[in-house]
Image (cartoon, rainbow, N blue to C red; front, top):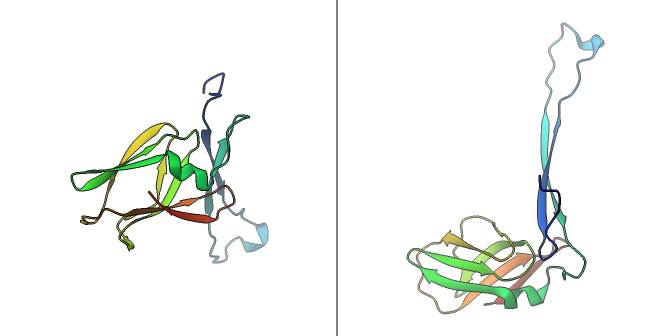
Length: 133
């Protein structure tokens, strides 16, 4: 792990938590059904001066068609989670997309020749925000 985190963009960390129920002496020799649970929690570090993910974030996302997919460029300093990519109001992505700050990501989509693209992103509060790109 680096000694110093970047000051010009967000950083992400994953906390993996595994819970395995203990064996109790009272249940020894008896049949029991137990469930182990695992959670993966995303932790974001946002340096001072970087705005939260909001409607203005759309102005920093660029979408370009490339073969059977799209290339989405994130020019913001935030990690951006995209839940929906729509072309002419038809959902064309298969899964949620996370794009790192100041990076691009290729996304395979259902075949669709559209001029109007709409993205739905998830803000800091877990709310969905949609806008035309």
